Amino acid sequence: MSWRTVVVSGIAKLDLKLDYLVVRGEVVQKVHLSEIAVLILENTAISLTAALLCELVKRKVKVILCDEKRNPISELTAYYGSHDTSIKVRNQAEWDIQAKGLVWTEVVSQKIKKQRDLLFHLKRPQAAMLDDYIAELEFNDITNREGHSAKVYFNALFGLEFTRAAECPVNAALNYGYSILLSCFNREVVANGYITQLGIHHSNTYNQYNLSSDLMEPFRPLIDMIVFKMDPRQFEIGEKRSIISLLNYEVTIEGKRQYVGNAIKIYCQSVFDALCQGDIGLIRFYQDELQIYESGCIL
Image (tube, rainbow, N blue to C red; front, side):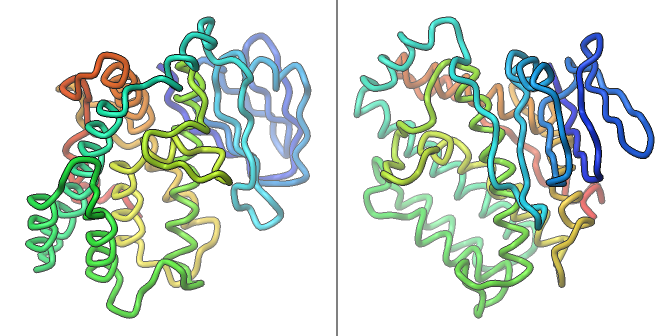
């Protein structure tokens, strides 16, 4: 499995040579394409060849483009991620409503559990409230326990005055992290032959990534955890590097230690199997994320 997240931040020319990404900047650096999962281009002065772009697409490398402020603004997505895309998209449009509801309920449950675990680890008394929300969770989360949990959770992490709408370094860091996560999920959705627009719960007309937005929910607390420990007073290059490095940390999934990027791959495939077969027992969620927090890996 590819595992490396490559960030190019300076003025450079990128090209392809013998299956290597060649970065020609102040020094020449090479990375074999088989190792790259995500390529982030942070500088608008970067140029790259069409041959390299085509090969990156063929190898299902997620390419993320940043604006003049070094914030993700776009990504490269292949037209066809699988040889049987047509049948898979047809199946996606016909996924059983009951199966989608069960999967979404399980996804929300796991998200709230991971939020609770982080609050419990930090000795926040609000963890008990999230336990109550988990117990109250109904099919398809029709009572919006997810939304109620989010308010309690973010206030417990960042203070009662904190709102997700505020312009502050914490929200800048959260948004940056979520955008990187979303790109990783877009990569897996397309690689498995599905389209990102058709979600199992999200159905916003203006959201091109409804399915990815659904799938990424249990992984959001990983970003929350790293931002909390970072406690940013500003959001610059150093903070961005800390967030990006999360993809190369390890969690447990299917009884094995995997990089977060690979855990996303395994998890997505299991959700697609669950939706196609109508069996939520097939879903594989990651575990032991708090080991990342305790290990001191997060800056």
